[in-house]
Amino acid sequence: MHSSVIGKIEKAHRYAREPERISLRRLEAGFQGDNDSYEVVLGADGWSCSCHSFHSLHGCAHILALQDLLGRILPENARLSGLFEPAGVGAG
Ligand SMILES: [Zn+2]
View (cartoon, rainbow, N blue to C red):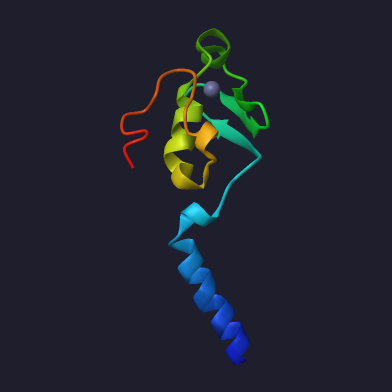
């Protein structure tokens, strides 16, 4: 393999261990819940979800799960849902 390709692969592995380099700005996801499937969107206005909980509580388990899963690659303002603030936010 060409040495420049090897260098790019090594750099990619290093980047993958430094998720703070990445800022995910838009996302559309299908989410299979226990009873139904939902559409979750992260856009310029923040999160939305097609489930009932999001519309009544402005937050839901689907968004919380994606926040947990995506962690540090989410922009700062997308790490919180309207439902409640996860423990540890702002602690590092
Ligand atoms: Zn939801």
